[in-house]
Structures are given as structure tokens and as C-alpha cells.
Image (cartoon, rainbow, N blue to C red):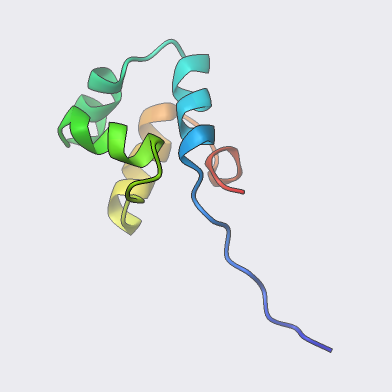
Length: 71
């Protein structure tokens, strides 16, 4: 029996949906996280994923739970 727990994978599409649901622009989220808007674009297009610190700041900026932006 395999007891390994798969960690959730970040989803750029879900991030975009969460941002739009809250009526925020990429620039607004970027300002709240403390990064440039290009980072938000790269995360939403799955070119890169936020590191641990940025992930926490992103969740706070959106006011959402981890499950909302992961698969």
C-alpha cells in the first residue's frame, strides 16, 4: 500500500480564475504580492510557479485558500 501523499500542483488557469473572480488586474495582484506584473502573467500561463513565499503572499493577496489555485 502506497502511503505517499501527492502535493498539490499549482494551476495557472485556476490562479487566473481566482483573480478575475475577485475583479483584480494582474497589476493589482502584483502590487499586493510585491512583484512585477510579468510574474503574475508567467504564473497564470504556467511558465513558472510561485515559490513558497510568493505563494503565501499570493493567497493573502487574493484572500483564497491553497485548494483554489491548485489541482
